[in-house]
Image 1 (cartoon, one colour):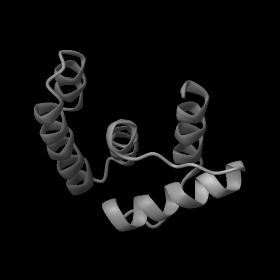
Image 2 (cartoon, one colour; image 1 turned 120 degrees about the horizontal axis):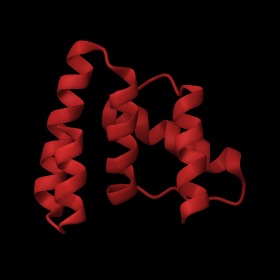
Image 3 (cartoon, rainbow, N blue to C red; image 1 turned 90 degrees about the vertical axis):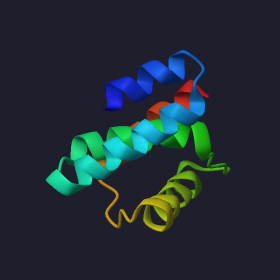
Image 4 (cartoon, one colour; image 1 turned 135 degrees about the vertical axis):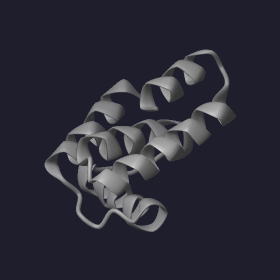
Length: 91
């Protein structure tokens, strides 16, 4: 499902991509697949959420707040922190 979301995004079908990503997130949450959850959230975040700050700590705090409020993720894993760092470097 996540791969379909990625492909539809590349084709410019952003609404369809977001819906597919949300479905992938739901399925990954149901089966406890944290890697896919983090990957989906990362991809959704690239399109829908932007953290800004003067320091990495400020940015990571915003990422943690967004993950909790928007996606119910209460633990920011080292993998999620690394994804946030990768996105910062890509920006």
